[in-house]
Image 1 (cartoon, rainbow, N blue to C red):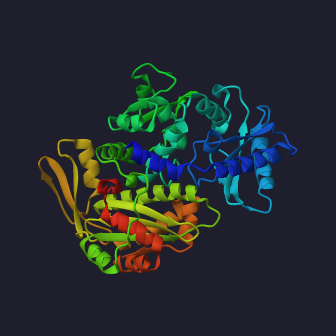
Image 2 (tube, rainbow, N blue to C red; image 1 turned 45 degrees about the vertical axis):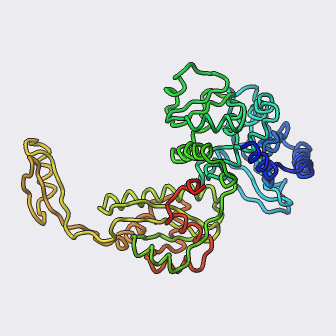
Image 3 (cartoon, rainbow, N blue to C red; image 1 turned 180 degrees about the vertical axis):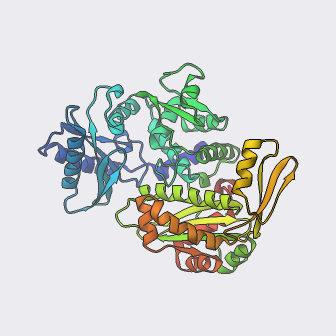
Length: 459
């Protein structure tokens, strides 16, 4: 395993020239901001580049513009945006949102984020969610074990390889800060993976021992609790989904049994030929909702809205009587959004059974019988309960989905509403196959979806 990890490190550790270039560029941006007129007091480089735990090729620069606590929230946001726009003058940028708006974009190949934050003495005084990030920098630099940056890089790349890395809404995975804290807790990449293989639901990591045994679990009540060392009221793994948590544990166990480079650098899915896709589509029942991509909506924000929309579609389909086996979402920024739905059958019987209250329940019986005064069949008593049969409004999945889209055009969040207005359509087997033929990204997505297998099990 040690030889394997050395080979991985050779691939993922930035060269000295790359690190020097990144530091020079980031320092130049920070100095430019410090020299600008305004209410801000300073500008700090934060994130993995500042802590030397970033991976080769990760050209992400996070600059925090620090304001005194006396600055009002309105001025804080206004000034933060003004400074951010000034930094990107002549370059591509966009307004993004976390708790408050900020500016991000690309300069000379670097992805730069200019984020306003308040300068505070300790986390209890925070006025915005990002204020504690400067403390994160200090804590990691002071507490990471000697050569711990190597172990952090290994852990990050492992998480990337098994597809559970990244706190954005498209991943719901592990933030880089959590990877750093895990190395501080366990001491090395290997010890971390050995510990992870034994994790159970409700696992708590409390580096600074803010809580006594069991207290953190009661306070946060999550599948994984990683207490922020600089703010004991915050679980820094709160955005991690249960699936990603379970995936990390299962991948850790598989790696210990059979270490392989593929856990760090997985092989790409080879898109199935159209003939094989056609055979698969005949054996399952798929439908998809295709929408346009609304302009000026950041991809991370769009992922969040798309996931929520997808859950609503599945829930309404289930409520209507269609048994949903599973579903998925996919997007191509600037082009399209896709919600995929797999059901047991796209057609339902014309009549469904509705079971009511026990016949001995006078009040609810009266209400039930009144609500179903003219059923297709019944009412009758079966096993002590009222039963009626009623005709379904929708018996075909495609017809139901079309009607549902009309409703969502009025009710959904702004991004999805705009996407629906750009042209929404229901895709059946033929349309799905046609998109597969012309879009390489969709090929990769659909092939992986239809395989339905955790990739690390192949290693």
